[in-house]
Amino acid sequence: MQKRVLLVVILALVLSGCAPQGKEISLTDAAIDSASVTDETVFDEELKENIEESSKGDLAPAEEVIKKPASIFVYVCGAVEKPGVYELFEGGRVVDAVEAAGGFLETADKTYVNLAALLDDGIKLYIPTMQETMESAALQVETFDKESTSLGSDSAGAGSGLININSATRDELTALPGIGNATAEKIISYREQHGAFKAIEDIMNVSGIKDKLFSKIKDHITV
Image 1 (tube, one colour):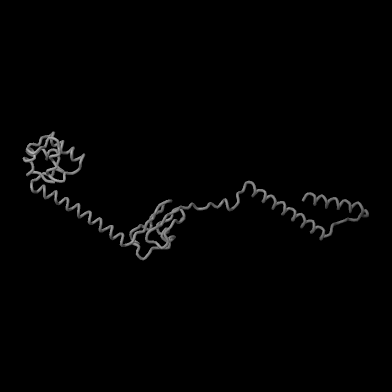
Image 2: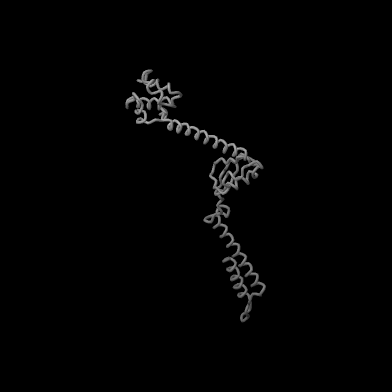
């Protein structure tokens, strides 16, 4: 821009030197407008170059300024349309994983999983069928019934006055005829090492308990 201004000044001096004295030489409006347009164009180009150089240096590109959201990977399987590994945004919920896998099958137990639960990276999300949850519930009931029956047997033994040699404490064992503290400890130790007695006769496997002692306690014990 400075070169253009200097050129205009030199041109004016030359014209003033060649013209007759007493006459004022002035540039035409067209020449002035042309010089102004030229100066503005040069200024705009220089400004554009400065902006481009600045963007290449200190300023980061727009793509780098915008941070990409973090993602997680979840393995969705079971009663869904399209089981597989899916990439989801961090902070996603179970419902997002199910939707990514195509949604529930008709056989899925939709109430089994918490659809609002947050997902973690690398987890396996299994959606059971209604049949599977029913079988699981039935198994739990069956297990509970067996435990109740076992407790009932123990209670029956206690009510009959018999001592269960599989669960009796040292004090309860010493209440048996001919059983002292040392023998009671041996019974408990044997129980811990070999497991529960299968029959009352198995108590004779304990060191110190032979036929004579067994004949004294057999009517007072149970398993």
